[in-house]
Image (tube, rainbow, N blue to C red; front, side, top):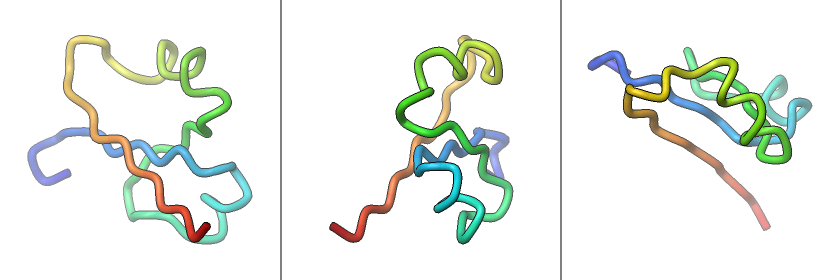
Length: 54
């Protein structure tokens, strides 16, 4: 994040709203393919993060 790389959390929206990394972008896994095209620059690297307690 310090280097300007966007961090994307793929948690469901309600879990993201309850707790997420500061500055992270919410793109739920179910919507990742369609939403990423709208919200992310395809020429820049991105870090995708998911934390699952299961």
